[in-house]
Length: 350
Image (cartoon, rainbow, N blue to C red; front, side, top):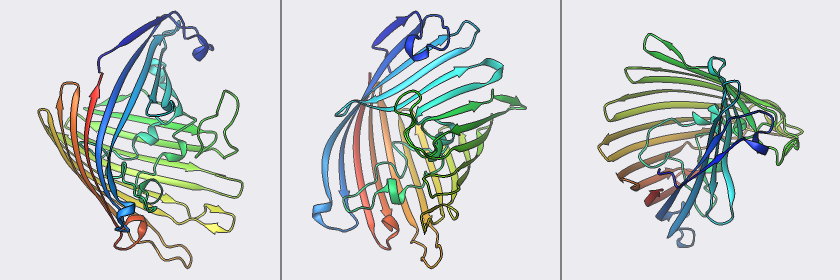
C-alpha cells in the first residue's frame, strides 16, 4: 500500500504516557473491497438464499518510534469504515531487543489467535464468511478455527527473540488474558466482564528448506460464574517450495469439564488442509476443513461438518481480482444440510 498521509509527533502523548519516546511517525493506509456473492441456504428455500453486491472499506494506522532506552514501540489499529466507525483490531508492541517483545492485544492479534488456521489460500480461509439465513452460521456451528479465541482480545503476549540454530528458526510465546473469552476493557482500569483468566502458549520452528511446524495450547477458567476449565490444543505442519505451499492442521477443544449450570458442553475437534500455487501475479488454492462435535452423556455426536473452497486471485498493481467457490456439507451438524457460497471480489489498496 502507498502511504497517503504521514504525521510526525514528538511523543506518544496520551496513548503512551507511561514511557518517554523520541519522535514517532504515524502512517495511514487504506483498502476497499467490492464483492458480488450468491448464497444457497441449507433449507433450499428461495427466501433464505440470494445474491447481492457489497462494499467494505478499511483504514489502517501504524506508528513506530524508539524510547530513550533503545526499546522500540509500535502501534497498529485497523478501522472498518463500512457503516458506523468501529475498531476492528489494535495492538501495541514494545520491542526489548535481546529481552524479547511484549504485545498488548486490545482487539485480536495474540500469537495464539494468529495460528488458529495457517493453511494457505488465494482469497480467504474455507470458513470465512460462510453464513446462511437459516441459522447454519460458521461462526457458531461450523468454524474449525476455535484455537486462540479465548485469549485473543484484552490480552498480553510475551514473545522470545527468534532463536537461530543450524538453519532452523524457533519462535515461542506466552499469552495472559485476565478476562478470558471477553473483549478488552472498555476503558483503562474498567473490566468488560468478570470472566476468569486464560493463558496460551505457542512454539513454532521453521527451516530454511521451507518446512515449518507449530504447536499451541490454550486454557481458561470460570468463563461465567458457573463454568470451569476449558482447554484447546492445535498442531500444524507446513511446507513451501517455489510457488507451492501446503499445510495440514488439527485442533481439539476439551470442554468436558466446562459446564454452564447443569448443562455440559461437548468436546470438539477440527482438521484443516490447504494447497496453494502462485505463478507470477496469479494464485490458485484448494482448501478443506472439518469440525466434529463429540457425544456427551446421552447426547449423540453431531454429524461431521465438511467445508471446501476453491479460490483464485489475480493481482495487478494495487488491484486484486479474486473468486471463491465454497461449500459446507452437513452444515450446523445436520445431516445432508448443504450450504453453497460463490464470491467474486475486487479489492484496491491505497
